[in-house]
Length: 75
Image 1 (cartoon, rainbow, N blue to C red):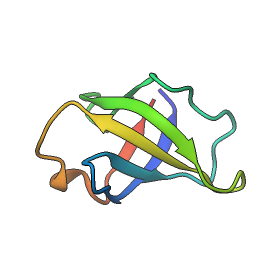
Image 2: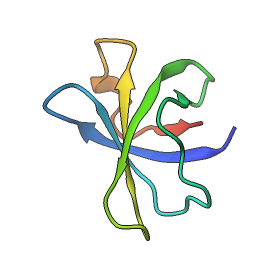
Image 3: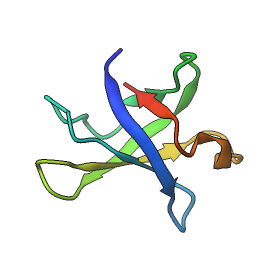
């Protein structure tokens, strides 16, 4: 597993927004994302923002994602 980044907030449509400044390879759309306990969180739906510090939108599998804010996400 590789570090994807830290969860910043939830988008208006409920996606998890992850900030990552140290990605060597950007994740592809559809790649599964996990929390630090290796529990499946969701799938990468979009990578956007500047190349030097991209943001990743993860479409979650759970509805209660407020607890994810501030935690690390992995792919």
